[in-house]
Length: 292
Image 1 (tube, rainbow, N blue to C red):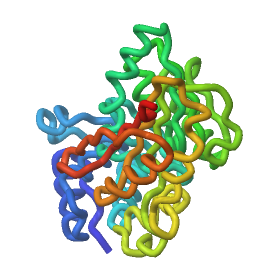
Image 2 (cartoon, helix red, strand yellow):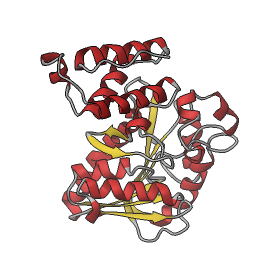
Image 3 (cartoon, rainbow, N blue to C red):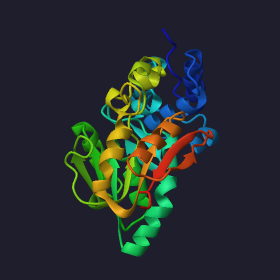
Image 4 (cartoon, one colour):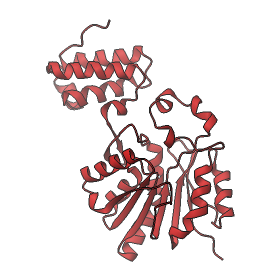
């Protein structure tokens, strides 16, 4: 059994880091800091300036429990219950995918179009398919005050989380949650249709990192036998809901660029503009209808 955690902030951080390092956690220093700061209500500056600062017993117990969960393999942001995305703090739930920095690529890819449309039209209507935490829609709304968004998800739990996030960020008046199996319940036309769909092949789910496989909802990961089923649905059905000059932006697996381009080409779209993520991988394709 591990020794009791120290009460002083500096030694507490060091012990938390040591426990996570011993459990072979990827970034023990960062995760220890996130856990200790969250439950103790302290900051990085305080840890440096006041290493002898006492942390109360209730916070110590919470930190102990959180470290146990983390050493057991649970992702740190699942433990904390939130994740930062595009400068926004988003609550997580068991029904939502944990938003990753790679998905910020999609926000950056369509942001100039959203801004230009809002400036020209007075608004920009966004449809976020498989919205999860609401990450993509809320990031765009937070940056473009004239934009509105509908977040679509098949999961009622995910939509409740997205709605809560919208409210906490002061964006509830411009975000609407819609429970729908892709386009089934969708109506109207949109300037932007965005999606980070499930794109892992069914047979590959078991090979994912434990933190993804065991804690992200399978519904948000499984893209069917070849990982491309959602793209076929979007390409086949989106035109009825897209404004004439509108765009479709989809996140892709880093090896799927050609296959997804082919799917949209067959459906009448020009070749997608490709955007790379921070690791230099193909991550987002943005499509417009091909010119007749």
